Length: 126
Length: 113
Image 1: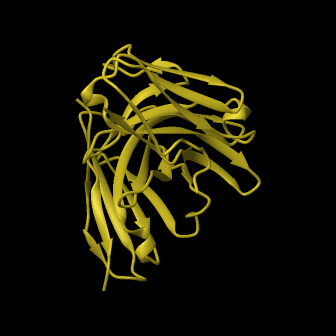
Image 2: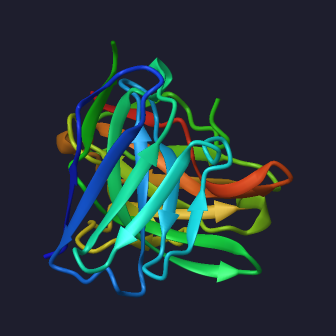
């Protein structure tokens, strides 16, 4: 079955850059699905960070756009998240996800996030 | 503050029916964008329950149903069971002058009494 697995450091220093990778198994990333990142601060709700298509087209949360970059490596069936200038407010469980979508006049109309990784906790501390 | 508004908590006894509301605006649900619902059991990743307003995801029992009207959506859970106790989130798409993207409700904690 389709599985997503996040990997990366669990601890990042303030002002530094977070890099996470999601490895997709059981399904080709070169498919008609989008791949994204969602985070959840401890005890709080969910926040969409951004999504990417295998072609490299990216869509980002406007509130994070200046600090976020998502890339895809189809040869490794992986996609990655980079978030710069980390602060304590960025501490969260980071999930990688799969979702369907339709591009409509430049808008990415999301289907549901149907496959989730188990999540990885990222702490921001010196 | 979340773009979509959900009650922080709801509760019900086993066998009863509960409804979780999700209120948006003209830039998201009211603009006819789809609403999706997720269940998050304690300590686990969220799981897709309902997609496209009223379609159950694979393996989801028919005790769960979704609906949408105007600027709001609802998740109904009938025949409450103890293992329905979880956090529930609605999600849609928001398009405004400040940008666009996927948005979530703040989540609703369901307690089975």
